[in-house]
Image (cartoon, rainbow, N blue to C red; front, side):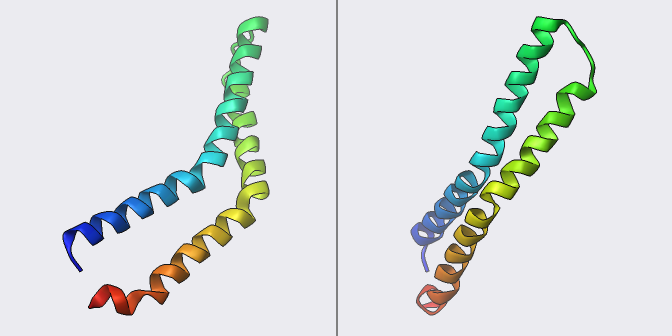
Length: 89
């Protein structure tokens, strides 16, 4: 195991994190933008109006993308643990 291998594995892990968090963050961002536009047009400055819809959107995104996220993490973990012998040598 050399430095190039470790850096490549780290890059794979970072890409996995980006791939898994993108749908949830995207839903939260889209709902936050819609709420901000709604607040700007109606001039409602309620603090909780900004947070509650984003929390609901994140929960919905986790319900929708949760099985895919779990399958992706399990595949990655199986790949890492399945190739553990080749990593040690």
